[in-house]
Length: 115
Ligand SMILES: [Zn+2]
Image (cartoon, rainbow, N blue to C red; front, top):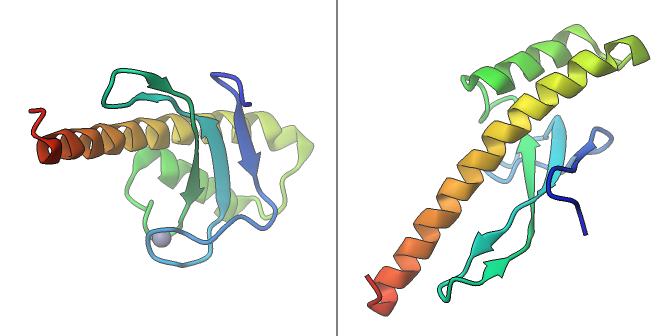
């Protein structure tokens, strides 16, 4: 079980982008809970992959992509800068996925005649 604010970053061999199938640069796993149709809190874990194609244009992703372009290997002196860039990107990815989840929930409720 991952804590509320714990984010697990995977730099080595990250999964492919779920959107375009291209190679991902970095993946992050974070806890993500949502309320189901009965209003019960459902804990879950989500994963986001940083993709140089799909994520381009999003400011926090752009900064991370630039960081990767400049630093091919992650030096310990750059770890702090990297962590804060990654945290900003994860916050955006997290918010985006929550919105999608809410849309999905509303769609389900619509179909079930609850709305
Ligand atoms: Zn992609």
